[in-house]
Length: 84
Image 1 (cartoon, rainbow, N blue to C red):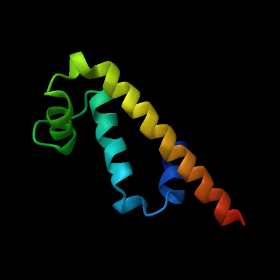
Image 2: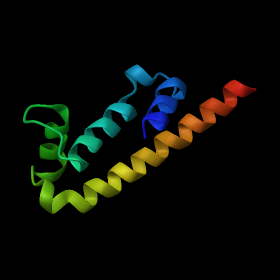
Image 3: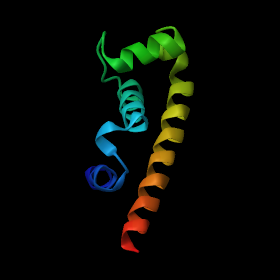
Image 4: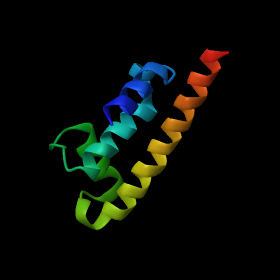
């Protein structure tokens, strides 16, 4: 997984300031139960799902998968564009 993360970081356009990457990170934290109260992932959970991660888990996971796929596709396209 680390190789994929490195590939994304190296090739995704404007990686460090991209809202889609931040959204993916928040969703990852929700899916893997790695968030704390007050963090942006927790705020997303409250705003979108009323704070109930157990009830919303299937929706959160589907959103995470969709966002991850979107990021991968954009990353691959950017990498291919760099190759000429």
